[in-house]
Length: 258
Image (cartoon, rainbow, N blue to C red):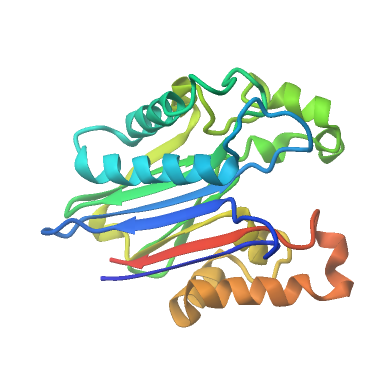
């Protein structure tokens, strides 16, 4: 088994709001991958004194621990319990009802000798590769359905955040876990898998440098840092500025060969 991961801030002068991890049990053929992309709030009050990096570190740590230690719990319940525990860590001092309370996109993959389970919430990406090389993309596309002009308005985006008809992220309400895209694949049908935050997945879905199979091939040959370096190179091309919202974003990738 091979696992490779990397994360890089979009701006070295600001904290990285992504969070990635991998865990392997002491025995057996199982494992866990977790990737979170913290949602950068617009300027203004969020009701929280801690900030997004604090939130993603605690939520990610809890997700990793529970995914490995409570294999009897389905991943949506793991996410619900992790959100609840993270909220409990700061509900006495922060206003968790604020629409911009710290939040994150989520990808979790967990495998044992029989199956590979997955959970995706919001716009990070999970890739599953079969023994024949076919790549399946697992996406939560609700944010993509929101018109881009709507997302240019802070008030309009806030009205759609964790709301019916809008899009969902992991924030302070455990019930959001039921909105995640979940599924399971027989272990023998997965040769490799990868989790990408949107700062890394833009190599394919924004800049069209290659399809998802080619993206996975880059991860296999050059590692997670290699993919991020390719993204940074394309972002620096002034002729490609039309394709991005912000020039650089926090970028993270986790790759595993089973």
